[in-house]
Every structure is written in C-alpha cells, then in structure tokens.
Image (cartoon, rainbow, N blue to C red):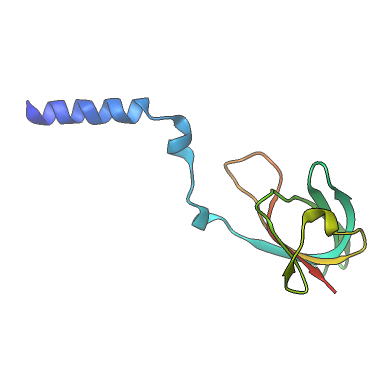
Length: 115
C-alpha cells in the first residue's frame, strides 16, 4: 500500500511539472564552434553579425549570420567593448553554438575583434 502511494505521487509529480523542465539540456552539452573572418554586416538593433569566412573544404568564401545576446563577451585587443563598437570590415573571431532544442538562430558566446 505504501509503495502504491509513493508511485502514485511520483507519477503525479512527473505529469504536473512544466514541459520546459523535461526538455532542458545542460549548458555543458552545447557544442561551441568557432568562425574567423571579416564582419560584412552588422545589425545593431537585432544584434546579428554576419561573418564572411573562407571555407577550405569547398575552396571559397561563405557567410554565416550569428545572433549576439546581451551576455555575449565582446573584446578588442583583450579589452571589453560593447556590441555597437564592432564595425563592418573588422576581422573577428566568433564562438557560437546551435541549440538543438531551440529553433532560433545561432548564438554567440564570445566575439573577439582582431586588430
């Protein structure tokens, strides 16, 4: 009888928890990738940066657009800067991830302006 009550309470607890809690992945499971190239487009309102980079596998240049949330760490010559200080034609390295549980854009974790 006691076991039945515990199993019933556990089942109710699992059914009543929010669906987000069941689907969340730990931040450590994110695979961070890096791209280096030239900032060819910057949208300061939507905080999207487009980087033109050379893709050695295909032997040509390609572009990637990445969203930079407000918590993105942005530096230039090891000093912190704000997003609006990044200029088109700056050489940048962007560390980003693609959250498979979110249909949103690629998200930057760090942007380094070179030079």
